[in-house]
Image 1 (tube, rainbow, N blue to C red):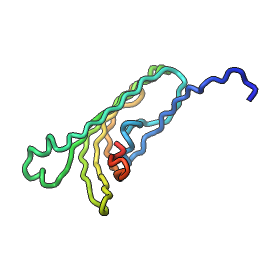
Image 2 (image 1 turned 90 degrees about the vertical axis):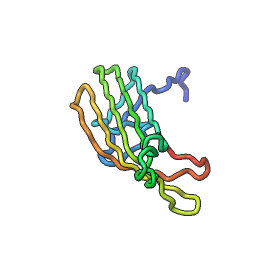
Image 3 (image 1 turned 180 degrees about the vertical axis):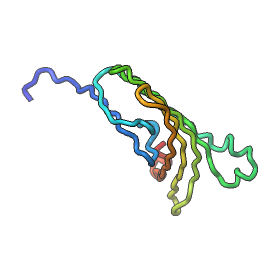
Length: 140
């Protein structure tokens, strides 16, 4: 209270990834093997792309299942120990009705990850997402 200079805490936490559940890929990594925090410089990039039938609609019998493809990735570089982590993921999603206005998206994903402190790994994940009826949008 009596401090004349109050600095903002520059602490960024990276949480360890869940082994089976797919988290929001725009805010977290899917295959980060350890949790850590840093106050140094870091670069973080996330991207996800929903194809919305652009690839699946060209396959006649698969089109009727209403499955959608999704792909993306993430990159992390931390100045401490020159830590580098990269991952790519791809999967399929299907939207189900669970009421008059509610929708649930079920997804299965494969994740490939590599960092300079661990070997390349492949894992498989599942996600459940309920649509926000107020915004009419998914969380990712």
